[in-house]
Length: 407
Image (cartoon, rainbow, N blue to C red; front, side):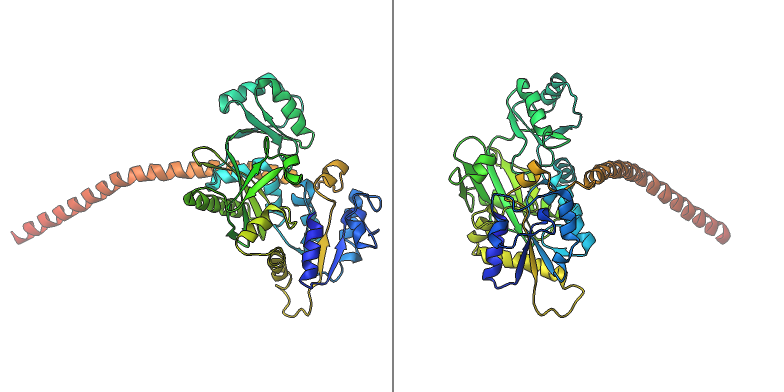
């Protein structure tokens, strides 16, 4: 798990550390091994998370090194609690985290900033007509297609829908994990990912599942997938993937490190799937594999990420004698949140939805201004001709006046 790997790396780098699992609230385990046990140490609840972050457990902390995964861990909720407490932390901030977790919102921004992404639409209603949805799929991009939860990770709530008979099942599965089902054009081809570390794109990594597609089982079962880094693709395609990854990363306002996932079709065209703002950070995860390809060890990778957090923490202070890091370990993986409801969603979703409305308003205003500019461009030649005629007539009148005076 990420928390354990990060903790070991920080210890090897000789950073003083303390582990806190907010789900346990004020009743934290006494032994380190208890944090990583599959069995819960004590009762867990939403309120515990608030109590833990707002307690003396975090007094004197300079940086929180976030080792969290999953919907509420990555969508800005925990980040907002840390912000309210005045704590610095690694990774992306509240807004970028919320945008990245909301797949539809990400795709809207991708389209506006030049990041290529597959066509899509969403279903928000719990009561829907599968036949009508199937017709819309046929009109927009056809079958097969992808139906997935709009704000989940690790392919949770995702189904490859082969034909109209599977549409209802796909939406029902997606809506078990999200209020919105995202229906997306299926891109046949290869699975690529690009890790971003401190505003630099690492080598492109290709994921080759042993069978089927890269689902939860293939991601978290040893030996179920092969990882090739650098990916065996043309150099110009690799460069394009890195450029698109950086563009996606910056378009959402991400910071520190992230992983940008792509599908590449037979024509080597790239389609961005999403930006993962808190990717797995075990020694065998994808980001560490990409870092290792350019000579960055796991410990160095952790040090670089922590350095980014340290710079934020020391921005208002000139002297710090030692660094005190908190490793926030929340469960083994995102299922800890999804299945047990550890952290309450604090309404960031409604804020993101309202932002989408504002973006549409901005787009309409941009279109209006563009039309005005185009209209002005058309008027300029005529205006210039008019001015030229007036100047010519004034000059002629002056010449005629001079001739009359001379006579």
